[in-house]
Amino acid sequence: MIMNAISYTFPPDRADEAERMLIELRDRSREEAGCIAYDIARDTEDPTVFAMHEIWRDDAALEQHRTEEFFTRLSLDGLRQFATRRVAHRCRLV
Image 1 (spheres, helix red, strand yellow):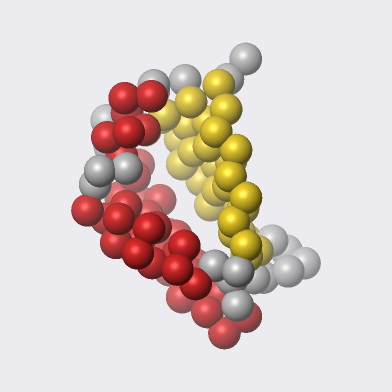
Image 2 (tube, rainbow, N blue to C red; image 1 turned 60 degrees about the vertical axis):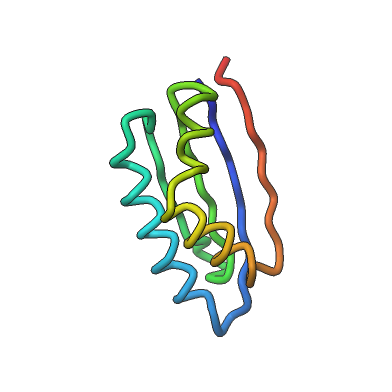
């Protein structure tokens, strides 16, 4: 299984918009056959910071996810365009 752990920081005036987009991304991703888990959290002390935790069945499932229209629209063309910081870790579960 593959785990992605990603943190994003957004401008304060766009953090609520980012939350809505992340929720849609989460909900659509959970519908995919290869998605084991997909969670989004908003930092309790800094509401501009979000954490994502995704688990995928295998590399093929994650690569398929990245070809989905909603992933391109919400992540590549959306969130990543206005995030001020993004830190991602792609990991294998041990």
